[in-house]
Image (cartoon, rainbow, N blue to C red; front, side, top):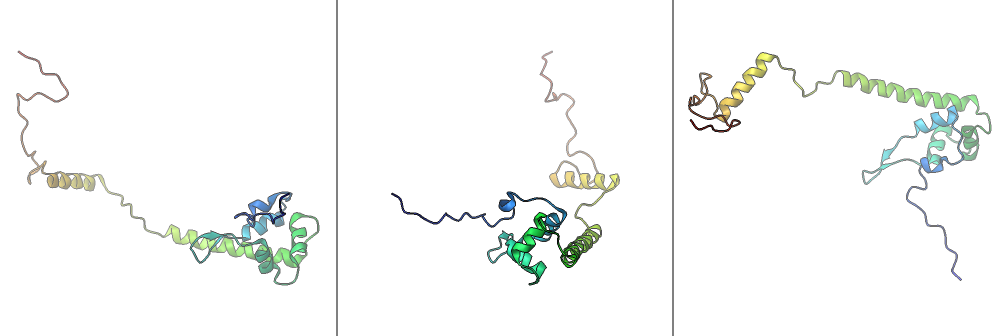
Length: 157
């Protein structure tokens, strides 16, 4: 007979995706999950906070975790203050993302658009650097008239 042991705790047991069995997706549930954001822990790994932490932050002691769970799953109707708190959190996120979008629209990228003349000058400069052109834009050596092109077979006269 084997000894009874505690069930081995898996690494992702506390993850929100793991807890979705039997969860009804109401507007409150979707809003709540949108407010739960991953954060960096001490070892610079992304960690999703536990549901209890997020509920404690949103409810701030006015409701217990199981009651908020009933609200989120649609078993009970949520009070107006909780809906207002959830809306406020989502609006804060939207404003933060709008500010980021505004900053990104003003961001100067490293890609430079060049005119055709500028591209031609750059090509000439690079060919000079490689030694394929002389200073007066002439080829380094004129092709020999009797030379056979590389892609054609040599024909004897």
